[in-house]
Image (cartoon, rainbow, N blue to C red; front, top):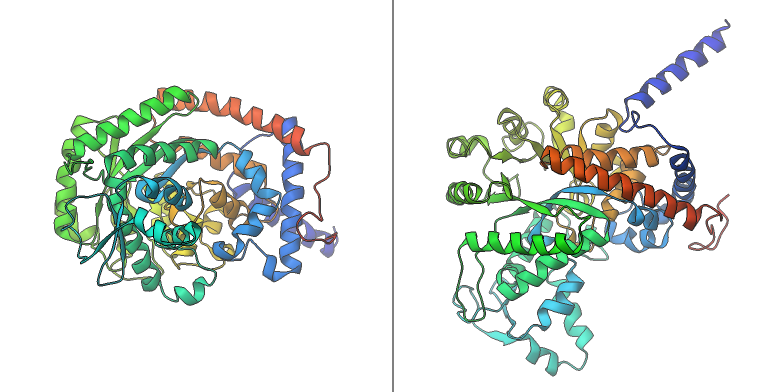
Amino acid sequence: MTKSAAYKKERQKILDDEERMRTGKGFQFSAKETDVNKIFMDFKEKELTRGYRHEDQNTAALHFFKAKSMIEKGDVFPFLKLMPKGALLHMHDVASVSSKWIINNLTYMPGMLRCRTPAKLNILTFRKMKEKHDCKFYYKVSDEREDDWFYSTNDDDLEKSINLRTAYPEMVYPTIGDVWNRFQGIFSTMDDVFAYLPAFRRYIWQMLTELYLDNVMYAEIRSSLKQLYDEKGKTYPKEFTAREYIDINKKFVKKYPDFLGVKIIFCGHRRSFEKIRKSIQEFKQLHKDFPDFIIGFDIVGQEDPGKTLYSVLDYLEDLPKTAKLFFHGGETNWSGGTRETNLLDAILLKTTRIGHGYALAKHPILLEKVINNTIALEVSPISNQVLNLVWDLRNHPAAIYLSQNIPMSITSDDPGFWGAKGLSYDFYYAIMSLAPNNAGLRLLKALVWHSIDYSILTSGEKQRGLDILDRRWNNFLTEAIKKWGKKKPNKNKQYGEDLN
């Protein structure tokens, strides 16, 4: 064997070994899947080629706010929308529904008021008793529309108050603190709308609808189960909110039987010890009353300034043994600080999954424990980008996780706050940015099936879900071949040039 041949053999062995480590390599392909993969890879390669030649059109590297319209015009995105997504394992209900739907529907409900706090924060509410907010003046949204010659202008302004979108995110949100202040302000703007009983019922139904239309079949939703209030100002306990959730969920599943519904991960907020302590007490009772629906507990909010898991260990010991834990951890750029120890304590506390896990790549021992204990990471690419952890998603640490087949699912976090309805946009970045250039349908299928595996569905529910997923996947393959298999993609559709 010549030296050149030995070199080539060793080189190929390394390439093959790396390939075998990647997520999805254990999934076998049918002949139909092979055909659909060829279709998808043609789409993917053309979009990547375009991005390589024209950096201003490189959607895999661009900020979502700059790339969204280009993503929608390409061929990869409609393919992903058609594809079954399995389960969505990390999304916050108050931030789940598209802002445009909220403006076009909820803000036209009778009785909505708007006020502006001294901190220049818009508050939308239906409450008759307005002392809750630090506002001097309240205005009827309907009256403001009548005074405005152009409804669209008024609606556009309202939508800006519940959406982070901007043409120049690098200028509007130059630091993590800037974007998080704005982000948390949107929750304040929306809280009273979400808690208004008639609006809540419509909102949750729309949340389920947007998931179903994006081919998501099940979701585990983060929620604090806010106390609801009605037209007369009467407020209801959180037990009532849970029952409303269950009722809406049952009605939706009855109408769409191939949708498995949702379950709730109850959340406390890390901004104060008292809030965490109170949320644990609330969760204990709610979990006791609805053990099959309110399945677990999490602590949410920005990690850097918030209370750490270690600082509330005494409170967490009071959680019932039947509760599953789903802790946020490592949603930070810092390394070696006290906040980052949330990853360590989440693992020691036997968390079921880790929300984000962005900083985990910096901790090899913790990473090994995640792998050995099959603790799945809930990876939200767009959220991590919009909230200023990473700009170019090709540099996201989840690329490392995929290269080593580390347990993970693709999630959307707060899609309504940045116009990423459903889960398809996050899947776009997962396959176009986080994944290697040559990764295709096999990786996508693995992520979809893993989402069911890492869910908290019972064994019976999982089996039913997998049966439905098998059927829907096969229908998807047939539809993809019917739609794209007999014709070549229009290379000039979007950009007016031949990239070959």
